[in-house]
Image (tube, rainbow, N blue to C red):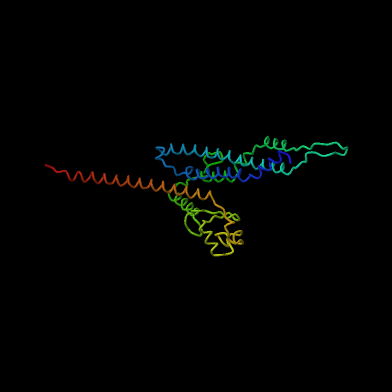
Length: 282
């Protein structure tokens, strides 16, 4: 086997590690977008809402730019791996005798194949803009792939609508079986649905012919008996829950400060009125 072919085989064996690197970066960007890229901005940090909106807009653009680089890198990796696979199956012998009895050295075109791949490694912008990672970020931050604010938002910032959105988010972050927020979220490899680790244990204990918490409503999960092998840790869901809890804590602290300020204002008003009545006229 040629050195190029041997090297390509080694790289292919480490494919999972390479891909995991891009997936990990995406998970971090998704978490940051959920926590800091939304409409709820703590104005206390920046002083006023206008300044806050300016910084958040800049933050969104940087997140989208970083994601574009990450998605492009992942796509280039996939393209290169395809070429490497082609190289790995080429196993030329060092040489052989031709019909005239002359010894001919065989060469591999692995080098030229890789050179052509890297030379034409550019990924169309449309591929990046329509990638699932890009779409997820756009939805979380309500932006276009360029990072600019989407015009589809309309007037969805009323208190009632925000509360409804938060209720939907809260429901999506809870386990169907335990009805609690995910602690150790596990994703079903067959259908992609998520259940908490304790929920998986419940399904295994029940010994039902289903591996998905949605039961008969899941076409893929209902046909397979539940086992730990069918599940994997869902890091993205775990980060979403942590992000949601942090945002809720900040909102609660902000509400508490506002309530305290209102109470102080009321005390000052009542104290002022009482002070005038208690003045003794000599």
